[in-house]
Length: 443
Image (tube, rainbow, N blue to C red; front, side, top):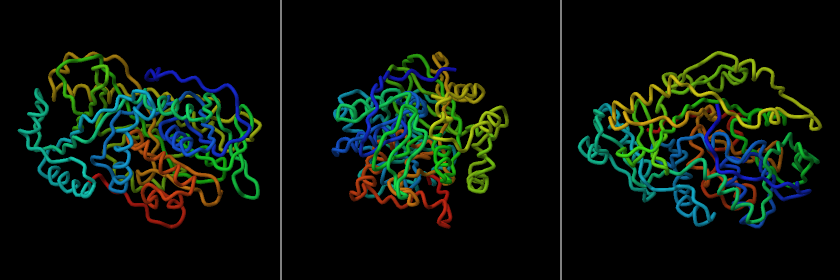
């Protein structure tokens, strides 16, 4: 099933012999990192095995939110909102960014109390967010039949168009001198005296002083070939795009049975706000102990599924030579089949909550693989065992909105500048230094 239509991006034909930094992965994280580095005067090569933004960066909901974030992500997301405000002017392209607000509904008094407590995480950030009464929620969302006890509403939260954002950022990076290669998989890194000195791509070798791995759901496999253990799994989220519809809410809404976001074309992105599918694959056993606490914490939301995906991933090699094709060259775009069951359930719940959606027509369905870590926060970090190697991955479904700030933080780490925010919680070594991983809910 084809994924969403992404703004076309034509990669460079020629491979540079040498750059300062190679960025692996052309999603919003990799593109943002490339733009930040290029604007600082470094020579950069962005290498993407498929097309710019063709995987989860174009398949997500399009939410740009600070609301209900893990508190450890709040400082970085506050910076991201400020960067998004300037992104259209900075890139010279439309990303669809609009501060239209996001609302999280509460069905019980306990949820009202939990959401109200979460608000304390925004103290000192000058971000507008407040609890709504049922009457205020209904006034903001006319036509709703949701029996809410209250809602957490953040008018400073926003939306953008996932199919536009990564290509816009990558084009801006190229205008500032970056080399951007599509259909150019990186097979692995090269080292000299233990330090990163280049990358092997399917089109040849690029010498460099630093490498940033921003490979999304592919990052764990890439790292494994370099002798690194990066616990990460894929979670399937299924999305519907509707045709344009009049009369629906302008603010994005999360409820127990659905999540929606109005699109620039007047249609809506619709997904299940709670349930996602986790395919049982070899990595499920490889990282079982790492993810066991998360499974216990989120068991109601995760639907474990056996099937042919296990065999597909079992066939993938864990090691390969630099002079032979890598697994990334055999799967240019990760395009999983969505769950029609979860999609139809979400749409049915939406129609009960907002009867105007009885008229909604489905224009497209797609699935996307979210790259998840055991503690559901990303890795944005240097890799101490391999100087000059950095990783930005595992954004656990939160990457689109936070992407521009994650790129700036990664550029700080690569260049040695004072970091945008304290990167300690995002360190790669937390998986191996004996730290107890903490699972912190949005409350």
